[in-house]
Length: 347
Image (cartoon, rainbow, N blue to C red):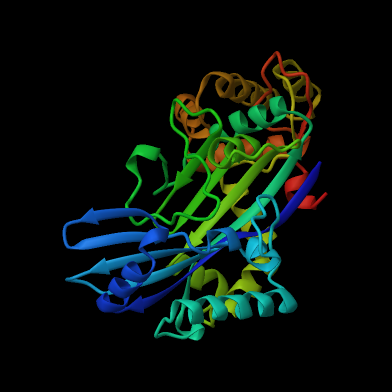
């Protein structure tokens, strides 16, 4: 499987005076696409530079500090046109180009702050998985829906969006029961989303692509960024995150139990278990888990139905790692073979 890796979107923030935001709104009123009011606070979106890869979010408040946020699609900013599939590698020459073009935008907007005053607020570490068909995209999505429910994480509902959520250049469709094209789980400083990129481009941008792509996005923000990339300037942080992106993504996939070498049909999984060298009691537990994963919505639900504590469950999963298959199985009608080794190997 062909897999592309890189940074899709990142955002920079800086404090900004109430009056400066007011002047920006007056000077660029015809570029204003959205305005939300929440009491004494307003959130305004300026789309003047969207075609070049930058959206601008203004948070104006009478009682708290006001902010300006630059939401950047670095691949689009480098090329000067919208790049829906390209992913960015934070290397020296490319970062230098990003730095130059952002300085030009800040100058055009006549902002009082300098680029060095901005802090890295969010980074989207991304993988594009090129599938053989739209059926494979759907099957892979269904596999992700059965992920472990992580502590402090909740599945995201599009009707519960915050008014201050980043309106990035290329936002995915958030999943609910009526949306079978994406799945998202989120915590305070981290959000993970898997979605059908072709469907998202068609639905939101009117763009049709020939490839069947499942996109994985790990969106990291605030304090979590500093833990992973240190407290340096935003360019150094981007370099570090780009360097460590595989390690960060693989670790998160492991927490979801989505890093098994392959997924097979139930009959094949049961055969592999029977032919393994494990003791009868272990084989019985493995078979039970396979059957529970067919009827339960997640690893967490299956573990609870089996009455296993976390430690015992992890030990059971390690048995599946040894025979190189996932306890999740393919639907009967699926005529495809799902290999997951590409997540780690980079193929």
